[in-house]
Amino acid sequence: MNRAAGPPKLLAGRYQLERVLGTGGMGVVYRARDLLHEAFGEPDCRVALKLLGESLSDSTDAHVLLYSEFALTRSLQHDHVVRAFSFEVDTAQQAAFFTMEVLPGLTLDRMLAQCPQGLPWHELQPMALQLLDALDYIQRQGVVHGDVKPANIMVGEQGVRLFDFGLGHAEAQAGAGLPGLSRSRLNAWTPAYAAPELMAGGLPSASADLYGAACVLYELAEGRRLDERHSHLRLPRPRQLPRQCWSALRSALARDPQQRTVCAAELRERLADRHRRWFVG
Image 1 (tube, rainbow, N blue to C red):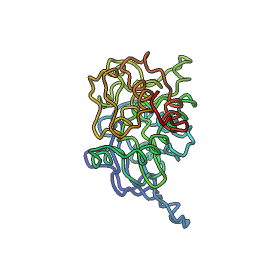
Image 2 (image 1 turned 180 degrees about the horizontal axis):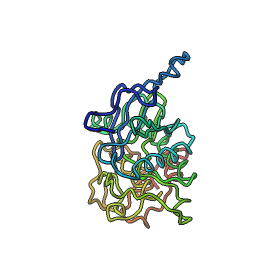
Image 3 (image 1 turned 60 degrees about the vertical axis):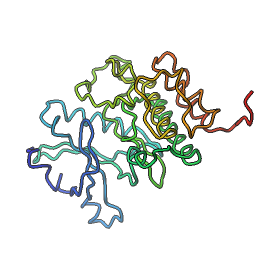
Image 4 (image 1 turned 30 degrees about the vertical axis):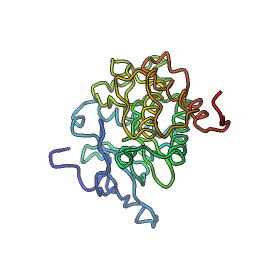
């Protein structure tokens, strides 16, 4: 497929591309109309469609990487995780792609740009709980997202949605010694949200996902990114975060993974504030 001229306007005889929704380390996501569903009178026939980006389109295993992301996403069924529909190949165009739900709303990075003082707690708390719900769910399914950051979190009327599992993997596959796909050449991690062990060449993990989510929550509560060189022991409490929630979030922000002594479910429980103390003892 000739990427210089851009993708075709119609894929697999049914998906009409409309506009770019976003780009990532591995691919480009378009909004598309499913003309087959439209012909049968479906009221909402729009889908999000992910194609390989130019940097990977000529790689021999690129379509396998794309299918791996689709299969991982399809295995997840949760209100706050994007839903994948189908993986397809347009043989005439030599293009592999997969479809998923269109996520209405704003990505969190765009929302944060409008909130230099951070979000007030009554707005931040439900978003934090939904993100941690999603993270706890995928971890219980043995899935590592690999790239938790604001650009991979959508916020809309239906709440938070975690998406883009292009750097993710299933822990069972790695634990069983099964052959996997190297994503290291994508080099797509954003330093402000990547755990220090990832930047040092380590593998994505549940602990690294938690660190990324904690960085997102810190930014939501403070209005600015965490300093990449921070020491979690001297880190000041974010301005919008209640005092009783700070010790758990600070633990999740530890640069040393051995010092991250909370999991996603425990951090969620602390932020849920069900047993609030009205005094400091």
